[in-house]
Image (cartoon, rainbow, N blue to C red; front, side):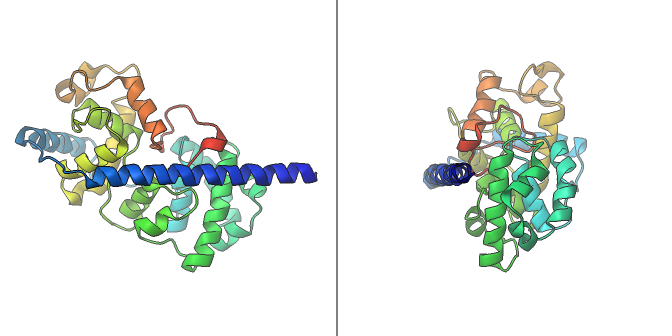
Length: 287
């Protein structure tokens, strides 16, 4: 029994070290991208982006709401964290019982990690996510008076919260200008030639999309792109000629379908739709 507990503690310590290292690599990479001089977008690309935005708004008229079920910012944070490498439908199936048992950061922090995992065992990476939720809730209680903070720096300091999750929270819960990039958005941006950097990272795509689209539309556009990617522009087996936007916007040689999705997962860009194979639990880092 003692040996098993020691093993669990050791595994959790290893996961924490891996997550911290993964976070540090992403922060350095994002800083390098943000420090680079961004060339001005061409009038043709700006016109293309405007046409894409107009078509997305016809397909998905604002206002839009995230497809996750929640009642407050804490529950939204939990749901977003759980959605990594998992479908929204699955997350919405498990969160009612989890939120009934732990509706606040204090209640979540008081639960044993094993109990949290029991509530979310249907989800991928449930062991790692349970550990994140426990530590994250403790941090909210100890550092933020049980309130979810509203800045990138404070959110990204929470267990299991990376740049994408922080961006989703800030944009959708706090109305802060942010443009979260997930696998769908990465795939579409490359497929449509909206990011011209060879082997572009999530940070490159985020930077270029912010330049192409007005800031006041980022919140809605983030969801419109996700919905479009799910319903019309799949990663595999996609027929560009039958796609409402790819039929005129797709760029030849913009990148293979498989490579696009793999690239997003390798760079920590796993999304709420959970497309792509889940990594082993020991390697999961903040999203």
